[in-house]
Length: 466
Image 1 (cartoon, rainbow, N blue to C red):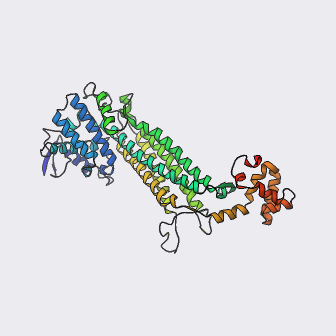
Image 2: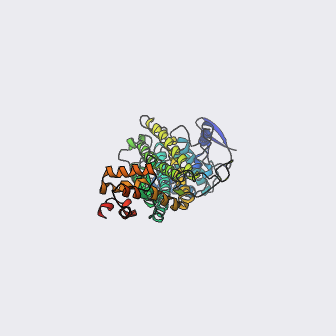
Image 3: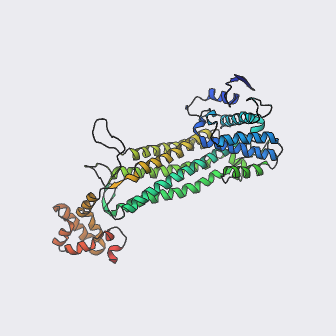
């Protein structure tokens, strides 16, 4: 065991560990979820970009020498490449506004940098976690900056998953373009439409949310790095902020910019609330679409049965042959989680006091879960459900032929009252509406067949112009 000291005393650290005394205390203090920061790989990568940018800026400012800056940069590159992520052992839920995660990063980077110099871990007289890796920084600017970059990376995973899901719905819209069916309002038969129109609407709903998410992601690019403790820049060299933020943008590929008011940016977490709000909106829509898929496939013999979802697994331990809509169901549950996370994020943002919000670890963890779980749910909905959906075309054609709702299309020609009379008589007698219309002397069966063509049933004004 190697001995490490902080102002509280001495801790014994296992020799293989890259973390040190501050991380050890955090592990003892926060045995909360059993989920460590290692479960947030994009946050670890983001921290590495922040620390590497700081090392470059500190070298330029004369705070670090070339040997220190190079070793720190190499250690950061290791983290960016995915190495040593298992050394991030602090629980995702922690007190201290992210100080434990920041110190975990500082200690891992310091000890890895020492190895790059050919020195033993713990030689903090050469590279110190606070004095060198954390130079010109505070948790209060390093942590939220890293968190925003991590969320930016996560959001682009979600955007790709949404685009792929939208593409699957668009492909089905094309496949089903000419299949007529009965549209429904309030779960009751309404007017005809095509199955392609229904699936195209799903795609349009997703496309709209992709646009909103791209717009909101820009909020993650305004950062307070260089503001240090409360945004005043104390302990950072003059001009540091104007060097470190452009360097961070260059290294990470994220177009970060300096916040207009660094003090406000250090305490204000409303950008995270905005992102969470869009995630809630996306979750709400995807859950609604999943509800529709479950309804449209319900039965299949005694229910609506417009479509068939692909059979993914046995649906019952007692009912042989039963198949359940498990993929839309998992999307529903992820949506419920995202909505719940939004409440937690809202309360954590509101709960901040004065010049700092102490609850950013919860905000970051909840946002990370929302984004990643949504992305994974979109993928499984696309691959394991939407791409394999089939239409029950014969059943839909039979329903169209028998449906009284077709009289709605005749309103512009014969008026509401006559159309209502046809509907009432058809329901009472069980006869087709064409037969009833002719019996009532309103329209011949031949004319009915001419006017009730598919293109007249699903397009605005087509019946009148036709």
